[in-house]
Image (cartoon, rainbow, N blue to C red; front, side, top):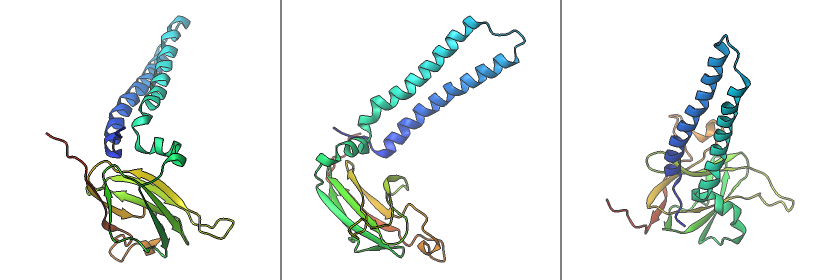
Amino acid sequence: MTFASSAELLSFHWVVYTIYAALILSVIVWFAYNLTRKEKVKSIVRIPFYGYIAVLVAGGVGHHIFTYNSIPWVAQDIMRDEIKPDASYEITIKDHKWIDLPKKVVVQCGQTVRFNARSEDLVYGFGLFRQDGTMAMQMQVNPGKDATGILKPNDILWTFNKNGSFDLTSTEYSGPEQYDENGHDKMLVKNWLEVVGCEKKKG
């Protein structure tokens, strides 16, 4: 199954939710209009109103039911115990720095990668961003140790289906030490991950 990218999903849901919001606003306008009427609304008029509400509810729920399969992370979260990643990267964060971070990660098209990040002090984020600044994926990295004294893992599975270079940075504000005197993110690693091998669409 070919999944849509998060950017494609955002564009699609932006259109859907704009239409949905307009329909909901129409209900508010309808309600406000009836409040201004001197003549009370007859009970028989309420039937279409509640039917309209039922359509909105069914449409909202149905939209998510019929589109969840196209969302990359849903199936992987549900079936993650049965998925064996093609590659796995162990990452530690401490003092606003990436510890033992690979200088460059190259992923082949269609590969599923597991990122396992551990924090030794603060709450950080692990986020991959496209070159246009949009976010491809992210997870929160919480500190703490398990019962055996080992740092708790914060992991995510991700399948890459489009060529491109991705920047790595923390998606959580972890204090002023994360930024230099010019306001630049010291945890930003440009072009840290590159996806190759995907066929380019014609046209």
